[in-house]
Image (cartoon, rainbow, N blue to C red; front, side, top):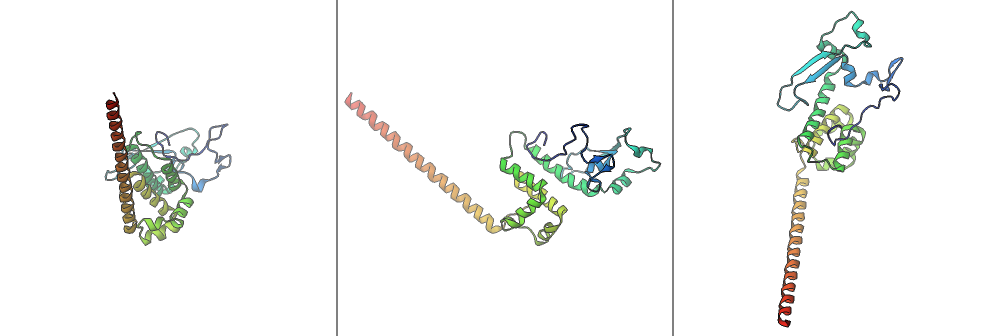
Length: 232
């Protein structure tokens, strides 16, 4: 994504007309699954609080994008913004997009000095873009043995893609950016603590060994210096 190291996907426009590849002379070939921006058009939206920050009331405003090729302006019917949003089914999509933008804002808050590792980027792409892969990751790995996920959520994310997407946002916010919401199982937490202690113990032993080697080297040099003085 632009200005971040978060991977994403975008529609590749046609080379000839720089236009959407799904639009044909007969109309949109993916109309039932068209993106949110297409559903809103010709209504534009802006949000004073980018990403819908938690604990901050949203302040949105809407405006019309009036372009000659939009034939809807020739129709006699008038719409309110609320009626248009309901007719186009954007409420759920807005909620999903808000959670997505929260992730983007969390990443931006870390600044450019902190970079996502290649493994973190792969995880981000899978969980946010490839839901089938993410679902297999949850149910065919040790994920549910590691994280304490309530049974109701487990049942929902088995079949419900919307629930799975919301869960993926929560998972990414927690694992990549330290947000609350996901809990390790106690036994796994204990394993992590023991593993950390083991690593610390190994590091301490390594430091002690290096200190002994340095001390021995210092004694050797002192001895050589003493012998050289005696010979001189």
